[in-house]
Length: 80
Image (cartoon, rainbow, N blue to C red; front, side, top):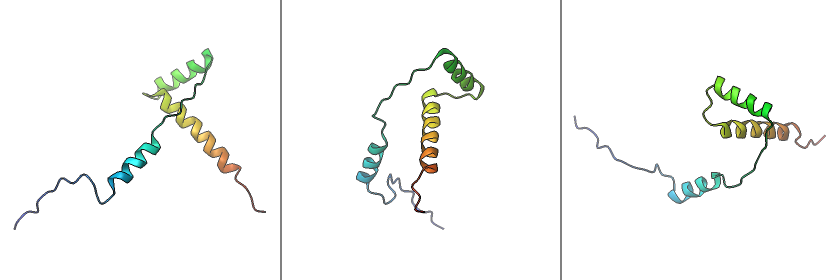
């Protein structure tokens, strides 16, 4: 019984230009700054230490986006 040849294909039928365009659209290029007081920063540091969070920026981004998306979902336009 002969074995099938393994091929090293990088793409699985998806256009590489499309993948590049999609990656470019997800790149974070807009910067926003947030200021915290000492107690807020201590709470964030304690949370990161307790739950072993390695990226504080990812934690803050996720928390903000969850709040924003929840707010948008709750206040969507109603027809009646």
